[in-house]
Length: 287
Image (cartoon, rainbow, N blue to C red):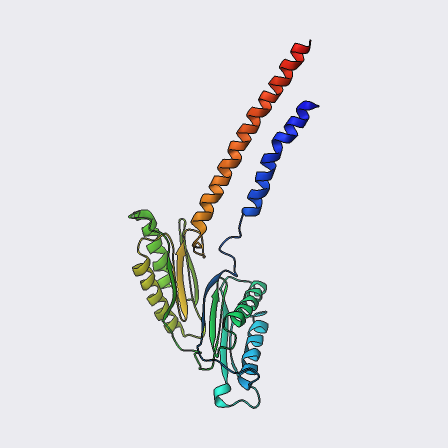
């Protein structure tokens, strides 16, 4: 009986560590709701105005439309609206999303946009899986190559194989004629997308700019994101999403936990062996 008590007691620390480890695991940064950027107009509207009603109406229309489409644009002018009360808006989901995922992403984006840009006459928010924008000035069908968000990962140095694969991925993205484009070469994957209110030519022009900036600014980085006003281009060894800024720290911490668990497991085996040896010797002595 004593040996069973020892074994149970010795296994508890490992169980605790496993429980801690499982609680520490975090969702992947590729979650469709992962935040990328938000921008809000400095111009504010007054509560209770016709413009506020138009804003609420267009955001509601955006969420409803996302149930059956991955892109749509709107112009809302409720009865009693003056010229300055008209609101323009659109949404777009990543090209590989289902209607259900698109709706969930857009609904979340609209909620966040309301929190971040409450009372603002215009706002734009990009999540991993979708993009939402509204404004009092029409931007529909207007090309916009303004850089709104750009991030580059750590340098991989002069590792020619990875850089060659990256360049091949970006070259394919630049050559395509679709609004949503994906590419892969070995472990390197890329994705590019234009807002669908642009023409095919405008989309190509926007993506060419994004890809050129991505190669220029991210150089030998392991991953890179370049978001312009109406398009984006990205590459990574982890798929469509780049690593979050704390991923490296998370990986290091997980490695420490794994090492700790392995060390404790070895210690448990050793102590269990000593316990069995002690009980065996005690039994022999008793004879």
